[in-house]
Image (cartoon, rainbow, N blue to C red; front, side):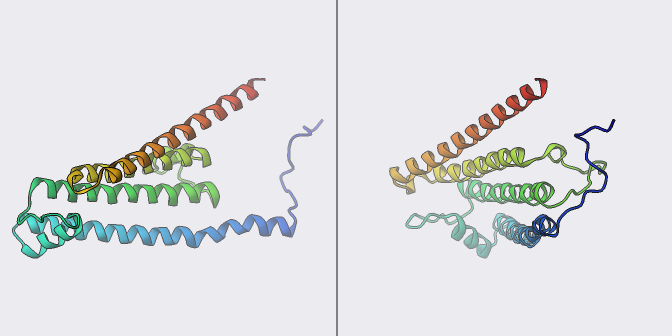
Length: 203
């Protein structure tokens, strides 16, 4: 006797359902646009790194470019490359890398979850997190990446704390804490859903 829950090998799908399901490919230009944004970040990274190396080698033009990027308005500009300036530039480079990682997670994870399978199960370079990615996992990882980016921006502000008002420092700290609490709430909600699904399967 055939299992009533089993689905036939060939299922007839109405034209409307086919159209709605095919609409997921409308996201393709969005992911291609994010790839172009990734290219812009790579170019920006190398420009900043080139200026840092040039300033370290004594280039006055490179030093001015760095100071224009990291010096807070209405504050004294150093006349040479110092530790604080190097730290701010390096934090900016790390910020670019973390945003690039965020883009990769959105591009690869989003495409795999919402558009089409990429069939990377046996690929040697398959990211570990991609093997069990779903909308819930992707949401949690994106929240953690945003916290990391926020931490970098907060650290850059604290390095120049003397140039900011107390209200600005407090506001950025509160925003960072809100990001952190939001990520914890997302992770806790996903954990509850996972436990509920596991219990329902056992029953």
